Image (cartoon, rainbow, N blue to C red):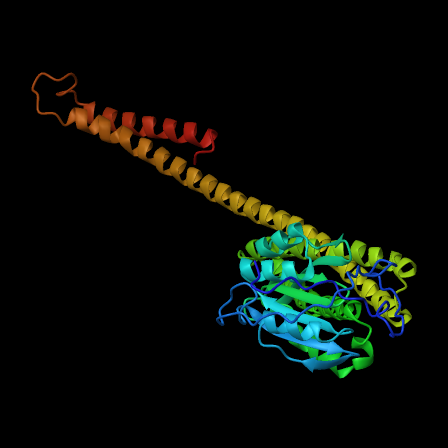
Length: 396
């Protein structure tokens, strides 16, 4: 666990003495965050710079503390982030992690009160998109996607978010999405960032959903190419169809749950007093997700149809090849019949000539005056008979 003492619950900006009450977001129950009323002493700096509990940078990609939509600190470690956030009663910490270690997540869990089940999911990865609430913290799992032009395939990444009243923690497993661009966008619009962690959640959702657009365009282009290859008789197209269909199953698993997640967030707008501007933004994201999900469903259906057409064409091609082989075999049989027939016809006189060519003195009709003409007539009769027999059977 962390070397730093646990950060005690600070008064929420809406309940802090002398502060202007803020709207309750969908992340915060109406009564706000609990306050024990005691001041929290600054945490002692952690020893070392490794990735230990509360220690150095480790897998921290970027960490920053914001107040009123503007960056006030750029800590270089988790311990420093905790300290800087305590110094800002109305601040917000945004911590980005890339494949963090267990000790780092346990440190964050102790500092921000993260639920054990959510921490285990973030460590193991390979989760389906979902949104779960643990007290005043949302745990969100997203599946980002990007299209790789060179291999013409879709690469999926996994993103876990812990969103609380004064913090956002992102845990990436994969290359997508590019959260640095999201951070730059939010810092360029401090009026949006000042809305708090829920605004960061919106921006990340928007970035993930916008990242689906190039994937949809790339897949559409692949399907067009596959249709051309199917009707051109490319033998390798079946494997390409199968691989793309498998990617669409994965894409469908990434997009379809988002529709329900966003509708769940929109259902809590009135309950948690979500800012009107954020409501509009999230409705726009929900529209894009619905459109993308419908496109993915259409792609999967189209690939199923293409696979069936390709199977039909392959079957027709195989039937044509079998027919050609059968015709070739029939022709060979006909030739064999002819050769066999002529061989039998020529064998008859050879047999007669061989018998009468034996050198024995006491052979019948050996000294007969009509023996030679008789032998010739016998050979001719046998050959003629065999010829008509084979001709009648269509062997000749």
